[in-house]
Length: 566
Image (tube, rainbow, N blue to C red; front, side):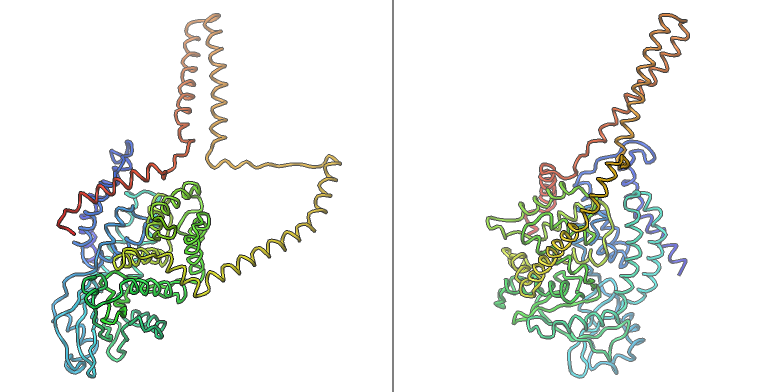
């Protein structure tokens, strides 16, 4: 195992080192020194493509790593997020003989465990593959863990852990903490996804939450034929959700289907607290009567009540276009740094809403708002809670699927109606009333407490016994720099006067020494003012820069796709 891990470490370094050197040169042109380099969105997109190729070459573990990275805008720039979002977990299945060994180790001879078993996989993924079979006359789907995947994943996880110190040097200190926590998160996530026992539990719980909803089907687990390495489920065929032509042939109401999909995820995230976290079209199907079918619960997550409440606040704020409330919700969720410039972030939110809405003020998309937030998260680095990162990504992917079904789909109207029906908005109004009542009570108590304190303060003033202490906070070092410049100016002035007096009344040598010292002080003073540009904060997002960025992105996409790619 160790030898395999060492070899994988060498292979990983060989793939990632050239890209790491490029990142290091972005910070210092000559690696150890030199000015930083500007990287254009197009250069980032090319690098993201090369990194994606490396992930695909390195195999299953790194494909999963790429999928997780696509949910972490606090670590990668938006160009990488866009590229990795296209990463599909679809790889050729392992040979049947190898898969059969795993199956029989878990359930015994195939002929005895199943009435019928088709040995050609109907789906292949990086960690497992799915076959069609029959149990007691019922059609089932059998998901088998890929042979030998455990040893490969463990070797890759060790290689990733050993690579972290090298990688942290290239990315700098700002994202080192996020990368280290990402490694821990990834180790936990991929081990959970290989545990089919956990997947069965999550699937069963989510299926129970939708038991009364006849618009949604989730396959049931055949417990007698399921273990930690084999998961046998009810077989539910259907049409892929983004196959709009076939859906039209089936006369499926695509607008209704999009609403069903959106409402199902709102229920999972806001009400149930447990959700299917991989909603790409390959995991969503539609039956002939319009019923929505969910597949593959290996990637799933939970949301704690605090985050659920903040998500409700966020949706309500977006619906009412309350910029301050949007920022407050994002800060409380941990997706936005409290130190971020609220004015700059307010402009980002205004742009997101203005760019996304049409003539009707309700016609805008949360996906675009979240995308702007993800871009900003990268510019203001912070760590995202793991499941919240999944929630953000799920929101964008689901909204994209809904728009594929119905280009005019109004996400906000559906979300607002759902929140109103479930009582979340009404509850918010009640909470608002309670908060205002608390404020009135606190104000009344203050009115009682303040007069005695005011009288005591006035007595001290009358006795000339009042002392005031002021602590000046200078986090940017402005006062320190001003003081330094003032002192340098005084030294320069006295040095100039001394040099003039020595020139008139003393020797040339004494004058030269004084003159050299004065020139040195003058040079230091000049440099201190040259660095004064740092006192002016240049916002990383302005209306003009956002327009230039969007224009550059559009040009890049236009050059990447030809007319036949549609």
